[in-house]
Length: 166
Image (cartoon, rainbow, N blue to C red; front, side, top):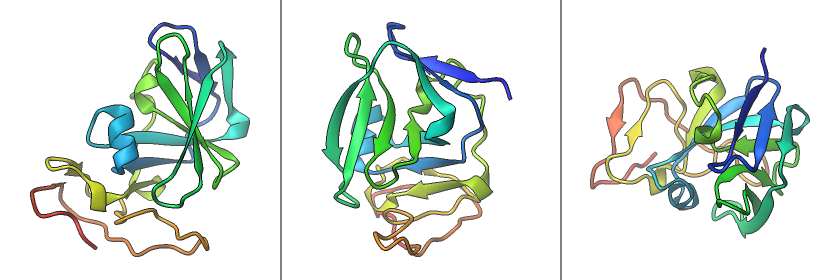
């Protein structure tokens, strides 16, 4: 696979992923809505060993996950403010990338067997829930690492005034 690069708006912070994402998370939590300005975040997840900063040095802002209470580290360009990726206290070996920051944000596929849709309990009206991809009300895993219940829909669903529920 050809390494895939991305970066911030001003070009001062650049990164490279040297492998396919292990999976892709479509997150509908309020944090991801605010962080992206959209209905959800598309977040390809990489092992830290295949992700490198190739120019610049990100600033880091730390918050706590509303789902787990554990730290989430937001990496961003100090010049233009673009958020490029996340690292996690809960998941030490991975990096979640803001998909829109890749030079080619279409280079990876959202494959049903390697993707998940999480925090649908917080999904905005008019968010589209994709078919074939497991859906979780909150996080996929409980703090004890057991799986939360999920459903997989067969046709796209647009969230209306009645909120999602499993």
